[in-house]
Image (cartoon, rainbow, N blue to C red; front, side, top):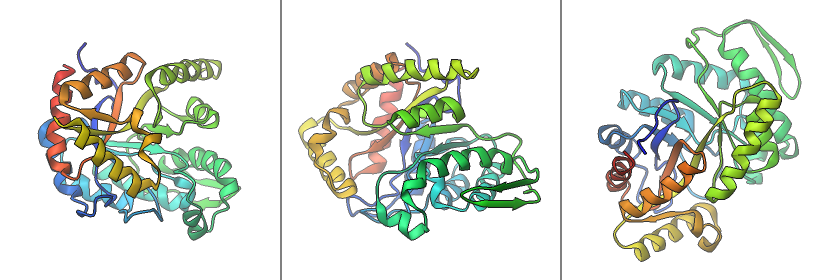
Length: 307
């Protein structure tokens, strides 16, 4: 089966090393250029204000990546609007979309359970779901350039932003909960799960279609976030993945090992194909290997094997 790239989020992409989990630095621009040269479809950045390891800010990083590349799509996997002033975020995203036309993929979600970053942003974590829904309603209106007045969790009184992109970038809603699935059905162009097996993805994708249909909306696409290590030494590959998960998430690798794509290009391609059969058409693959640039070559081999 050939690799379908009907939608802007389709295909194989790499999550840029914005988190210095291995203590080797963050060669973001080098990896982004390598991904574009290797023919990958998109590059992705994570988003946290405060994290377990040093992490670059997502919108700033994508702006730098946009200037260092020409073709590759630019995605957030995932950005947490709750931690930001929505009007200011709309201005940043509009500017990025104007400077890199048709390249931005806006993955959004709640971004985990780190109490410190909600506290640092002055946000009540208990309100995060309602705040995210509010932000997703406001962002398209603000990015369209018209007057927006709103009084909710944030007060907005904006006469109109300019310049504005020709069209709103696709919105990809992240999360594994029922609330996230419903949010994707209501407001998303695609859904971004993480740490799920193919059968569960297929089940949730069916529910997503049903919920969207009940709302009179087309079924959102599905983009999987996963960790990958393309290597001929699977045992060493799992050891490297375990090191990353421990440093980046402070959790035991056993909890997520079954969802981590480790092995040679043929093995990883076969795992990717299982997810494609479950309805996934786009992949944001984070490199669970300290040699991030070399992993781009491995992911390119995976993409080639998928046709």
